[in-house]
Image (tube, rainbow, N blue to C red; front, side, top):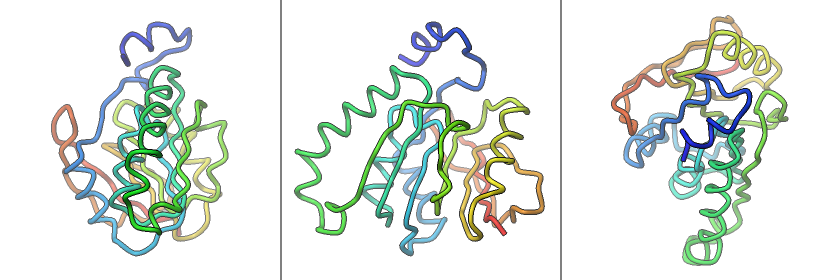
Length: 182
């Protein structure tokens, strides 16, 4: 789906290469990030929404947002949410039933995620200019915001590296760098 959809994008680049988290790997990432209530979660480049939905089930967030530029992948996430709401949400705890989950078909650099408490992005194939633009956009985030980057690093001293670890992804193990906005 991703390969086909990227061919239809007139501006597709290596940055649109698709890779997914695995449920067990992302569950471990959430555990390692800490389990206290984190408020608002964003997945920048959310693909089919897997990380958002795993976080909805196993994280402690009141609002969860996925931002995806590739329309076909975004549409899959919308379809999954359309099934989740009537089939899964009613059997969850009252707190989980109240979660706001949204997917947006947009370029995350053109989106407002300033209310984020926690950001995940599968940045492995981000080209240098994209990563720099993301880092610059994240400079305005509030102090304490957690930012997790897959295989890439921020350079600004405004982001403190908390830890790095290897986690399984659909294509093999990858390093996840855990940052905090200072």
